[in-house]
Length: 358
Image 1 (cartoon, one colour):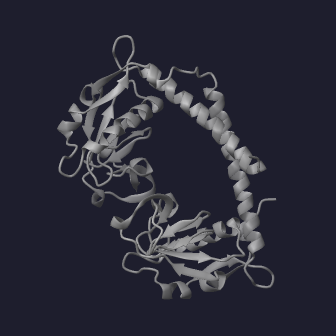
Image 2: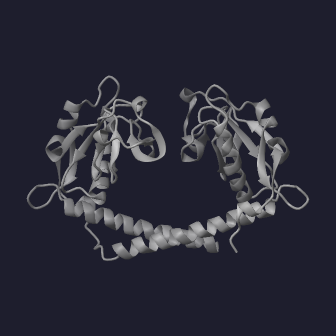
């Protein structure tokens, strides 16, 4: 039976009455980050709040099995954190040992609504958290109905798992005929200039000030290597649209200069990006080339920028065919083979997590 939120009675509760353990993370300057594998959760709304992976052991606060609430930056961004993580001082831990992951996931969605009333000028400080209220479904006695929350999220999870398995199975069936290709080591490689491989067109947007942000618009690409280059969505502006099935080469931006991303869909790009078109491109060829092209990013910095002229002359190594030209057929087949094997791994992993096998 499908569980519906609208069929429940709802009531306000103080966050401090819901969570028995509320604690802010500890300040850690970016320059003090040590290389490691522990997630560092800060005030970002992307990647489940994870801003970095670090190895600091001292003067940090490590939390787990709780919610992380962004106090500043992306104020109100709230995520369930199943693993151990190091929390910045821009994050508050919300925990209750009696809650399992389903209850915490339900609560995180509700708490995220707080972002609608806060901003950079009005952060969620410790005092405000204690005064904040959230609406929750209730029992007949008027208490939070945690059993319903858990059942509701379990139902959602099963629906997502079913959709996931169907999608992966269909993708596998389409790729099953892919023949195993020779290894990359067996191929002969040559250097090619990007300017000779692609028609390169500079992004047309001069910034977001002249565009309207919307949740149902076209992707806006900027100088970031996160989220496949997408900064946000904006209302479509026909004169600024770049056609999809292309590669966006990021020429500027801290931490992202030198990266490239393949784009299937139409988009709007900043002038910090050059868009490359090649009739041989498709999703598989595009992702192969961007993987190789990203190897060049170490040569660029703010003292040596990836200008349009330098991009044209930039060289990348690619496998070649018998005519000494880029072997696009090999690139496509190789990426299809990689995808096929990864999909099989994912499907096997999901079956094991559901059935608790090893």
